[in-house]
Length: 392
Image (cartoon, rainbow, N blue to C red; front, side, top):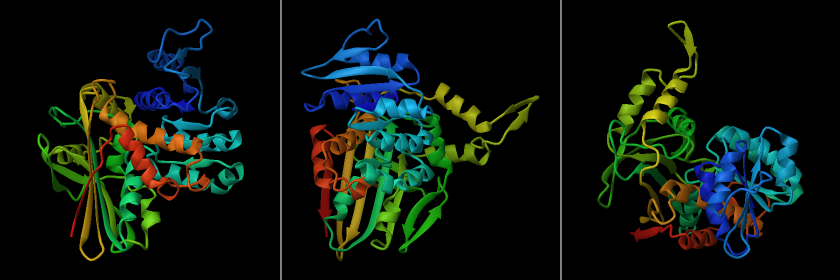
């Protein structure tokens, strides 16, 4: 197995992959070799003098660090060859070219996604992927990601499904002002979610909604209590196309502690998320870059976190179904809840591709090719508990 990107999510994916009895080896690769090396060493020992870190885990497991420039197509193809599946944990704008490299290498490929245009470009490679006998499956993190398979699983419980409402948030367990938020993934990804329009199904039609709008309240068990949720971009991913014509309503909102949306939207309204150059004292700067750096500098990063997920379904003349997940930082492994609920689902998809468990080959959204029941079983094995409640 191959993991591209040695950040938090790369670490989470490697952690999960090496725990699988049928995984012979894992390569973790990054432009910064020292980062990949650091992950390899976590699973066993110091780096080899040659510059390749090899880690012997339990049984047959082995982790190898490699250096890779994801812009170097030939080098990526070379690296991918010999691996059954590759997971991209790098910036989303690299994923289309990595998908093309995977097709050339004959290696299954999935990524953490996060951008609709890039995902569309990957899905356009369907014919090439089928011809290569592989899967290309984008958007395999948390949301977009795991929630798509939860939706597929819940939808299968209805003869006639009318509505799907997805709510997800990655949050600090101990919220601190001013934003009651900590960075649990890329700041660029966060800003994108907050400023790009959201795609939803309303009255049976696809419409776009401005992000950071339509705030609602929802209740979780203590210590969380009443939380807020608001429109953000990207969470519905390919679900809009998959369920168009089948449901009357489908949407996605991000969960935060109350007051977060209003505070962040003020910064957006002031232009702090704009990418156009602004001259200040003779220096041209991008406000978005300045804000990003300030968020990285001033927001907490590695405090204990929690991921809240709620997916609600309605149909069958009054039947409702609700899926809830409350996943916390794991002190035993040191993995955050966001790492567990983002990297583990991607690892599950990569393993399913390698084990030939997908329902069909090609470049496909996961809700169309990942068996939902099997996926739910794999989540349970990783102690990601989905609490299901039904009413009429």
